[in-house]
Amino acid sequence: MTKRLSQARFDLFAIGTRLSPTELVADELSYWSDLDENVIGVVFRDRVDDDFGWALMVRDRLGRFRGVHLDVSVTSERRAEAGLRLKIAEVSRVADLAELGIQGDETNAPIDLLTPIPGTRPEQLHPYFVELIQRPGRAPARAVLREIGPWLTAADPHFVREFQRHQFDQRLWELYLWATFREGGYDVAHGEAPDFRVSAPGVAFAVEATTVAPSKDGVLSQHPNPKTPEEIAAFLADYMPIKYGNSLTNKLKRRSAAGKAYWEEDGAAGLPFVIAVADFHKPASEGELGSMTYTQSAIWAYLYGFTTDWEMVDGKLVITNRDLKSHTFKGKTIESGFFSLPDAENVSAVIFSNAGTLAKFDRIGVLAGYAPPKHRYIRSGIRYDPDPNAVVGTRFVEEVGTEGYSEGWADELQVFHNPRALRPLPRECFGPLNQHFFEDGQMVTYCGTNAVLSSFTMILQVTDGEQEDRVDVLS
Image (cartoon, rainbow, N blue to C red; front, side, top):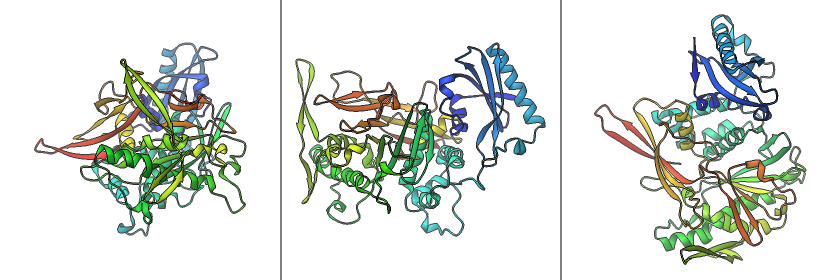
């Protein structure tokens, strides 16, 4: 009456369950459920006492897996596993799961991201939301969002409406950040201003999310659409820094009705403050990748106010820094070096990722076992090359969900630390992720072993005629 769960599937079920001290006191060993996956559990080793135990979870009134039974001080892993499986069988056979799951802290109703709000006209729905709820190949993303939704709080009453209508990208970016912080072992409080308070034993910081959106008027609405290497270089040198600058400085200058900046708001005052930015200003189209796959090189140049030239000398890479004073596009000019702006010392770091898209949610869902029949997910991209003389990344093509494939929420995340920060963000906050520091006139990067620079995902659907219908999806 029990079966083993993969870690990826259990991690999705328990995406909001673990408290931040968990990984400090226990090593998880195996995961189990009843045959219908209404009851799940984990076997663990107690790091302090060097013995074993298990925890059992069922869904609460909002649909979230929560702990209801625990056993500790078990003398062996085998006995802990047997005890958990017996308890799962007992609970699934005789218990009233709805009654057992009540925790007493549930709100009146869960947040449902996927059901259109009553009264919404079809033309009001965002095209990406329509794709999410209707296309068979998006079943993995739907499964992931069904697990995340009930964990969200109702601090922002407009969240679901905006996700379904005119701010799909912005809200999906916030959902991606929430999942990334949870994967990192943090407790995450989702608020209004700033968006998140992220904490674990001994550390806490506040995060405000923002995006780079399409410009509807002004000179930036005249998108360059670069094609040649020279056009792309000019685009990344001026147009994109201005786009990033607009989004970041808006957050820097924002003041509430009470005159407070984000870092002065309740729950954020005295903590390191982080701005998380993603580029959604030009979506993917037929035969063309979205801008986010190639604009990340513009953000660090704008943040630190310098760029680099490089050459190979006697087989070794030689890098020369070149200061930047400003960025200009069609008469619009901004100052370079965001971290040098007035008040920017209150920003501890800027987080960037080009992976807060539906493709990431799909891939996580595929890893958890939610790939629909006759669908395959092929990922192509570039990883960091650890060779100190490398000038380009290492290309890869992999099928998601096959043996040996691994992926985490944060693989593409990059953290740019502010050298002038009043409250520096400890490097340990993001462990093995890609982190950038500007030290002694040089940029120093600490890179994770599975760091991805950019990628896109192809969803292949096999038809009855055994032909493959390919749909390119931005990652």
